[in-house]
Amino acid sequence: MLRKPKYERSVYSSFCRTMFGVAGTLLMLSAALVAVFDPFYHYHRPLAQLGLRAVQTEKEYQVPGALRHFDYNAVLAGSSVVENNDNAWFDQAFGAKTIKAVRSYGGVADLCWYLDLAFASHNLVDKVFFNLDPAALIAAPETTFDAAGAPWYLYNENPFDDVKYLFNKTVLLEKIPYMIAQSRSGYDENLSYNWAEGKDFSQSGALSQYYRRRDTSQMKPVETYAEETRGNIALLVAEVEKHPDTQFYFFLPPYSALWWDDAIRAGERDAYLWSEAQVIAALLPYENVKVYDFQAEEGIVANLDNYMDTVHFKPEINKVIMDALASDQDRVTIADYQNDIEKTRLMSEQLQGTIIHRLEGQGLFQYE
Image (cartoon, rainbow, N blue to C red):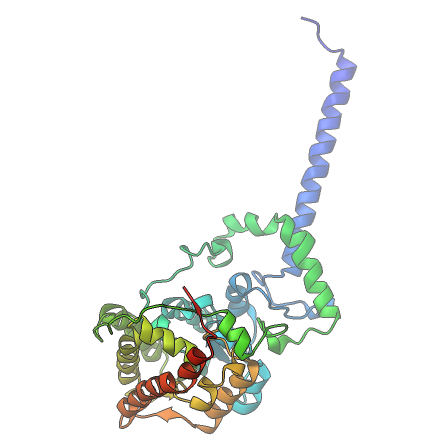
């Protein structure tokens, strides 16, 4: 067998060493850039000396890191319905520094997991504003991060799987430039995860996202989701009991008349209301808990121009809710919480004879 001359082998070996060296250097440079700019805040808060702001637009990737490394003393926890809040509203009204801990669908277990991150951080959290979505209260009391395909390398504290972040082309070529551009353009850090811009908040917009059930099912037994409800109550109560020096503000948001129409036609309304009543009754005895219910705010609920679909309302409604929390309006007590739940049930019935009847008469519904 012919062998390459020694000179050629030497040149080839030198070339390989050089290429491997260059590749290794580029990889290390890439990792260093990601670690320094850190657009998902996995290692630190934004570096002010580089002119960087807390550009928060991707909750699934940024919430864990922000909770670990940012400075705050109040947490706004909830689903996408709370994302349009301006953090400055809470800061000014409550004398706080507020951060959002938001998760799609607002599952109780997921939000409690986030709260645990916040309480384990260097911050002294003395206020928690917790949005209670009806559907979340009857969901399985288990975290959904794995099932939803969350980037677990950003959630855990295992340094070995950080390679998925440090050597990530999308992070290097898209996320870091976006962070820099938004920082230079004056991104408002108080509008973290805000999605309202460009959305159609109107009756036509809301109706376009609602596909009505053709038939109305029989109302399910009120305790249909009793097991799930009790599991979620246990999670909420555990947070309250573990942190007696923290004031918890729990609130039920005002979903639209379309959502209540669907709850009735699906036969689930009474099960939702029963679940809510159990949660309220379990939370109210604690001195560090306040509960507020905005579900029966008919002036909001019946005006579909407030919504882009059945549940998501415009930022002005977020401000109404925050103002009510700050002024202690719509607060529920042990003495009246059952009347409050009944008020919501009656409103849902009345909506059937008013706005829902009108929309039916005008033929504006789409059907499944």
